[in-house]
Image (cartoon, rainbow, N blue to C red):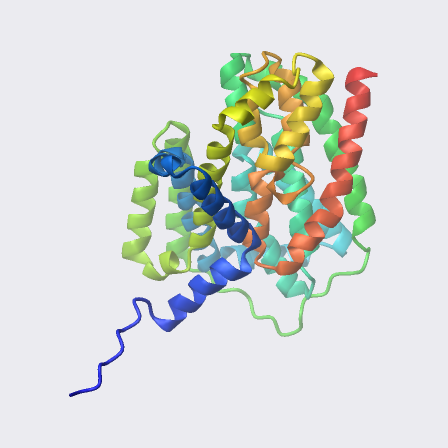
Length: 382
């Protein structure tokens, strides 16, 4: 009798290793998987509803942006831009201030996630050329996009939701949020100047000029605005399919190297958070918080953002109040603090691909939350 042959592994060794690292080494993914398992054990009847709780347009928009950003990186254009910037920036402090300001401004007009998709890869390239550790730069860019995106209705998802719900003019929304954003950006620029040394920047000797794949760059630059317009008009799913199809034909390796783990984390966040919020005890608890009092609403918005992220917090608390301005202020302040406070934080740290960035983020973000929350509370209620 012949010896039975082992069954072939369903995945090549490299893919199995990546899948194992994804589950074991990603703390956010591990927490979400454990939470989902516990929720399923507690109420197996929720299982058929999980798929419907995934926000498919948001996930499609994220996938399309990841693919486009991957194409920009692969083209070499961001590396070439980093080289050009390096010769114009005198110090690490100057570089940090420039990157923070650019991140905040982009977030006001392109949304916080798109700003990060542009700025973080650029920053990583600049840090490699200058021999700098990138973690702190990326952390401050995450803080910057949270602050800058709070200004406009299109800056982040929670603002867009509250703006549409309140039916206020665009300019009125900006005017109401301007004092908060001025406070946050002013404090952040001062903190940036203090946190980064005035040490001169020096590129590594012998760094060859970056080669740019002009064809890939041209395709990415054409698809980027077209994709954003299509997603803004509510066509994120077909737009994502089109982008993925183009790169599958043009550069299949781009799709292989895509951060599929980030997409999985976002899908699980939608399922876990919406399952928790849908529980009757949670709904009853929200009703009993007395959120008609402005002080309680403001503090609840910050606290809820720390627990479930500011987008779900805005959606849940909007059912209890008509004060869109105070709710917008609370959930935007709540984007600081712990990493889950804003999905932009998660995107930044995932793009950084540096374990040190997670520790560095909380080192700066938690005190920044305490300062902004306290000053804003005093300005609103004193």
